[in-house]
Length: 156
Image (tube, rainbow, N blue to C red; front, side):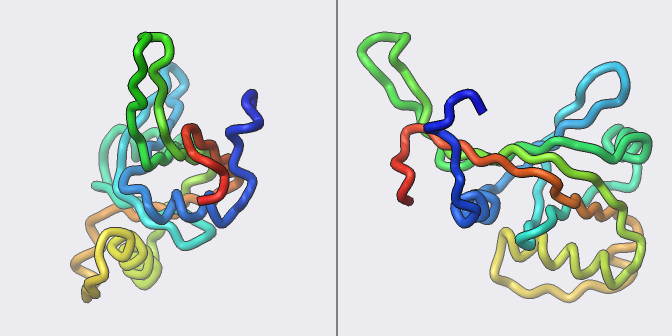
């Protein structure tokens, strides 16, 4: 990272960003052009979990190349200034690299969907095999994480 003073070195803060954020953007490469897509997600402290239709561009790309990059951000705010060049952004973000694994086992898919749902609500849901058999559920094995923040003190 070029701006070391913006690097978040505390893993607890990085995890708090992952737990707090609402959208995960995954970047994929299909051999010709990069492809970025925003998704809802879940995080268990070690892996990201995504769900999707079983067909589509991102699924096709991930089946050919399971390596991906992801970006998650939170606490974004424009910091206005008198001069245009002094405007700034306040944010906290995480960029990570990982490998996608398609879950096929029904129990694993249900457990992953529970993780995703718990990211957005305290409600408990029951899922059946029929609920999850026609969706793709993806576990992203996180290989590397980097946290960055701007406009904040490091003690949050």
